[in-house]
Structures are given as C-alpha cells and as structure tokens.
Length: 350
Image (tube, rainbow, N blue to C red; front, side, top):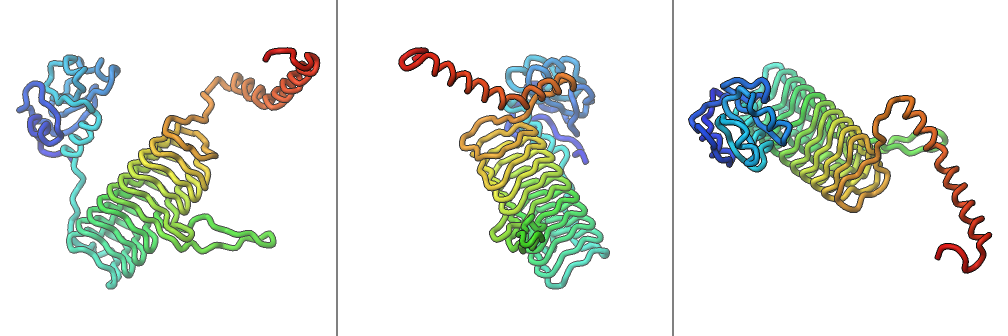
C-alpha cells in the first residue's frame, strides 16, 4: 500500500540523500523509468538506466552524482542509488502494521505467551509454551510449535511452519510455506535397512533475516542449525541440519546446502548452486549460479563451476571431447616419458 505522499525534501532527510531541483515535489509511490507517472519516483543505476532518464515521466528520480545531469527532473542524489531507492520504497510502501489480537478462528494454547500487541491470524495455531513477541504477526494458517520463540516485530506469512523450540529473531520475515525446524536427513544403515536418528537440535535465526517462500531449514541433529543476523534467503532453498550461515549472507533461489556446511559472513550464493556438506566457505566469497561446491573455499573472491550455454549440437561435441580428456592426458604423459627416455640423461629442456 502506497503512502499518501512525501515531499522530495523530506525523503532526502530521511534517507540521507541530497536534493537536486524542486524539493517540494511530492511522490506517493515508486515506479520504473519507463512507466512511472508524475506521482512516482524512480531510480537509475549504471549507464544503461541513465540512458532512459531523458524519457522518464516520473515526478522525481534517484541517481548517482555521475548521472545527475542526465535529466532536469527533481532528483535525490546519492553514491548508492539502489540502496537509496530501497529506503525510499520502504517509506512509500510500508508493510501493514500488526492488528493486535487473536482471530476467533485461531487456536492459542493457554500455556502460550502472546504479547497483547501481536496479531494471530485466522486458523493459526500457537502451541503450548510458545512465545510471541510484541507487534509480531502470525499469519493465517501458520503454525508455531511448542516452546518456539517468535521475537518482536517478526512476520510469519500464511502457512509458515515453525517446529517446536525453534527461535526466530526480531524483525525477521518468513514467507508463505516456509518450514523451519523439520528433521534433518539423519539415518544410519544396518542390515540393509535404515535407522532414523532423532534430530534433537533447533533452528536459531537471528535478527533482520528474511526467509523465502517454501524454503526449508532443518533442525540440528545434536547442536543447532544457525542463521546469524541479516541473512537473506530466497524462495525454495534447502538448508540441511547443523549448517551455520554467517551474518549478511545472501542466498538466491533453489540453492541446496548439505549438512554441517559452514557459510561465512557476507557470502553471496547464486541461484541453483549446490553446496556439499562438512565444508566451509570463507567470508566474502561469491558463488556463481548453478556452481557445485565440493571442497572448502578458503579465501574471498568469485567462484564459478558452470559451463556456458551453447547450441545443443555444439554442446554435444564439447561434452564428447571432455569425456576423452582423461585418456588424452594419459597419452600426453606417456609421450613425455617416452621423449625423456629417448633424450637420455642431461638432454632436453632443463
């Protein structure tokens, strides 16, 4: 829902940007460079966006200093226009506040503790011993298990499942269908059959995190699965038991992280990457989409393990050659040995 409108000068003060032009211009929503109207503010990042500035109909724009001259429209100027846009969008489109109270169709165990400012939606269930903090929202059909802790200003969207004893830190957002604290994949084999290993740890999620729709985070086998503060996880991500994910890390959709992986701080993991278990990824590492990580990464930097797309017939040809690489390497090694044998001691390249 958009706000009624905020002046450009007021926005500048609230987001720490400079005004260039008429600060009295009022904007009520955000929009794209191509489609924003006079009541909207838009943004430009980089040369590609800047080329669209002369044609925008937006009431105001957000730009970096280098692109301030590309349009005469009123503007906010900041070295990081995208982060400034994020702050402006939050002010113009605030999330709905909690509506205090428990819906008549919800079920709250009398042994649960629910702050009077919290909102419990229809058909939500809050089990015995659970704690719901101030201004928290438990959406329609969501489930909060026994002795789970939902901190202040948490938002659980509809049909989120929080298993018993798990902890969700303040201001964290969990989107629809996410499952926090299901059993990890723990089984021991004996005589050709599986013995289930009880998963007795928890999931502990820090402050200011966001968990995407239908993402699953498994509880620890013995110790806890932990997400530190300000971790951002996209939709349909799997985090297995006993993982630890460092603060300020961002993980894109469809990533799979196997058990006991240790992901550092400020790591960025692209969509559909696969992280093997019992390894570590260093602080500041960037993992490209679809990359498969099978060994510990010990230093920051970008890591890519994917093969660029090719026309199908060309890909078949390349793949066929790659299958022969080992045999080719063995032949080259054999030829080198034969050449050295022919040259004899002291001959050949030093």
